Amino acid sequence: MNILQSGCSLSIEHSVGGCVAMMRAVEFEEYGDPEVLKVVEAETPEPGPGQVTVDSAYAGVNFADLKARAEGYRVPSLPYRPGLEVSGRIRAVGAGVEGLRPGQEVAALVDSGAYAEVVVADTATVFPLPEGLDLRTAATLPTVVPTAHALLHEVGRLSAGESVLVHGAAGGIGTVAGQLARAAGAGAVYGVVSSPTKAGHALEHGYDEVFTTGTFADDVRRATGGRGVDLLLDPIGGDTLRQGLDVLAVFGRLVSFGNASGAEPWRVGQPELYPQGRSVAGFSILALAQSGPEALRALAERAFRKVTDGTVSLPVTAEFALSEAAEAHRLMGGRTSTGKLLLRVGA
Ligand SMILES: NC(=O)c1ccc[n+]([C@@H]2O[C@H](COP(=O)([O-])OP(=O)(O)OC[C@H]3O[C@@H](n4cnc5c(N)ncnc54)[C@H](OP(=O)(O)O)[C@@H]3O)[C@@H](O)[C@H]2O)c1
Image: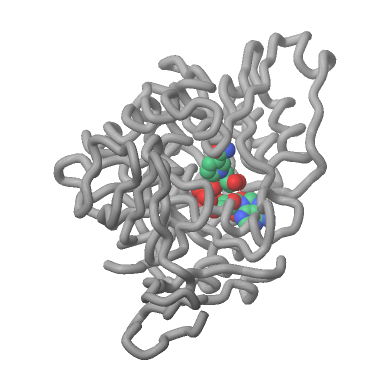
């Protein structure tokens, strides 16, 4: 293969002849700090059966993209192209695809590979944009909004009047969860952030009170008069999860949905659960995409309605060029970001 051979502008001449379209993508071929993210020229993918390709306008940045750079997460092999969500226009449809057409504006959730100019997506997780939703907003939605909805409702089974505690309250998930909990009639919505400078953002997005990481357990006991919270959303794991179990009310539920601490996998047994009828549940949107695509589709449609009806907004607080993906990772990894970070690709 010869890159950029004559007559093959922005494409390569294949050894068997003819031009193959090329695109830019961000990949890493070793684990490590944000510097491992490199822009590469890659062959433009074609959709397989049941798939589409999307000419990307924007890609969302998720904490899972940062975790991918750490060995032992969910990267099957190197080089790896991160990115779980994209908005843009359908470029091509694969065999057997119905109801989607080239040129249509969509948002999509993908298993990986959204940090690219052209992204392959399974149709089960491709969502035509509802009327009035722009491509920039659309890129913020596929991961965070259905996840926050599931954590509170489908998994957490929040009832009106109950109290909720959310870790990472100023981040992507946290910003949406605060607003959804408030809209569901929660009795009190408490957030936890690592630094007081992020508390203002959370207070503007549904939270009644915001605590800092080191003292949250005592703060919850004080705020609830020792009763504890009914529902706790935990993306941290380790000691934070254990402390969270201790501040659940009688019949309280903890939903685990991440392990930002990098701690060993937790185990919870009868001593923690039986005496007060507590429950621990879990959720992974990527696992649900594999195990129950129809359930995910229905969940996503319910969740996106909360955006189009104005219940939820997710501010984009920083936007980077595709080539600046490492900068976006530095910002999120430094724990100073709020709301949602985006990569601008073809917009
Ligand atoms: N299970 C699922 O389906 C699913 C789906 C999406 C996201 N998630 C999880 O939900 C969490 C939020 O995801 P997001 O994409 O919306 O990211 P984000 O919240 O915008 O940013 C990362 C968050 O992680 C917190 N954090 C805790 N420990 C950290 C550390 N060591 N380094 C950096 N940040 C740390 C930060 O809050 P503080 O600094 O205030 O603690 C920050 O809010 C992540 O843990 C992610 O893995 C799970």
